[in-house]
Length: 360
Image 1 (tube, one colour):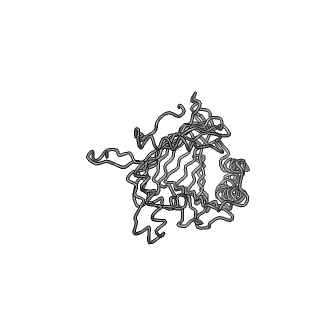
Image 2 (image 1 turned 90 degrees about the vertical axis):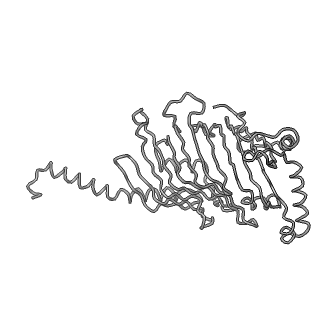
Image 3 (image 1 turned 45 degrees about the vertical axis):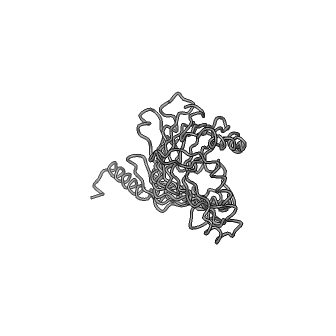
């Protein structure tokens, strides 16, 4: 039957057959390319387990992407993403711009102290890797159910901190909308920290600069302080028995210069459990924590409990100014101490963002 077909028909059938074969092998070819690209990043081993192609929407998906430090903790890879979807943003194409959008499902970033690779990749290395995987400019980024964790297993006890259930959406990163603003892109994010804290924030950014300009507002509220005892024990040499923390911050970066503040609030903090601390650290350790607890009581400002007006909450708060080159910013310790006294003896700080940094 094939012999009875015309030459033109045979050529068309051959082309169709070759295209079908190419489509069948395309995921394997792309997987090989992606794994080679990831593995070329200095100091890391990277790979994906599978690749899916969706030509009809100009997209491909990477299943189970891993990036592991060559001398890192094998139980905690630096990066793990369940699914990465990279596609053309069609609505921007109709506006005359070829840009892409990326959706990360269940990404996990683990920063393990002391696990930095022997050959740390430069900014150029990271940029090249991202461009090789997504050769068109990214205009929209979405993160679903992410997790970022910091761990130091050399400390005793282990120091751990994490934010999970992270949701993040970044819009107009390539300024497709042609927004006539200094900071045309918008980022919103939320999550849950260790100790049940609620993270919420937003940011205006100009990502087209080498060091992006930005204005950031963020809050972390309702953190159970006992969950941070690893940090407190390692850096403060004491621990807490009870208490909650709220933290508010504003940051502005313009031409590589950072200006902003952190505003922490500590409520109902209890440092001393005499019997327990005496048994674990001896009389001197218990006495030190007693002094710390006494200072905490002195610096508390008794505020009315919003949920129970007849009850007062012991609150310690300050404002920590931070300013300078983005790579080496400085904090004003004297002003931080004065703000601590101001909250305790003059007027309590209001919880929330002050709205004094930058302008959007």
